[in-house]
Length: 348
Image (tube, rainbow, N blue to C red; front, side, top):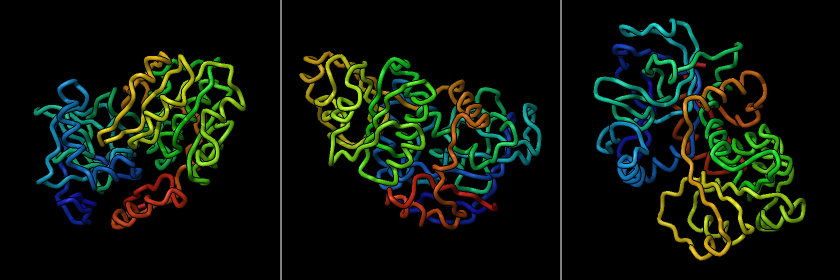
């Protein structure tokens, strides 16, 4: 099969052996797979990813076998596919079913993170192997377009962040960063009934997408800090600040800007060492909550929301490439004005 392979710190498009489903597994033909910012970072800083995964595994933070950098990795964890074959005892889904899955699969050796595994290819390949388990793999409902279904995974990240926060409809929110994670948070806040959602990003294109997803005020932080914009348009309700940028210095700045008694939700994945001033949090009695991923029920609920039209994810899709176009797509995503989410669409 054709695949975009991370090999020696580079992306190479190559022909690799087809995967074979084992007991309780499905062979799935990839229809659409989103390119995630985490994959961009992994390509250039894979050693950081492996190091952080190793540390987190001690606290149950990452599933399964660690990714080795001396062997091929086929990334891609935001996917939708069609079942084309089944292993023994795989009876939850039929050949021809369209499915999405939490990007984890299981075999006799344990758990594997699809897209960050040497053993199991992700969605930047023509074929994948998924576990035929009800709380991992879900049938796509309502005749939903596979391209829209593929956005279940990134939108579930935003749903989880909001659910882990204090947020109620009586609160207001500031979202720092309007990349895919920030946009998913904004959409989840809207569905939560939050009336004041201030979104901040340098990019006009991303600010426009934030408005489409439900932001009630968008600002360029070079012109007006996000919390100051919140004071201008609201300033009364309890504030929840969502950090969805993930670069050094942002968390400390959020702590400096946040009003006393606020909560800061950290959803941006900063892979580098960072510094904060704890006194800011102490004096203001801030609550800082870190979040990661989602649980299977949040994933399922996000799929339902997309299928029922509660989440309009179509505007987030700004490009499509075949597998041979994946390396160029990684380069194109460096420009926030050009793209939000590029889908890899093998054979479509």
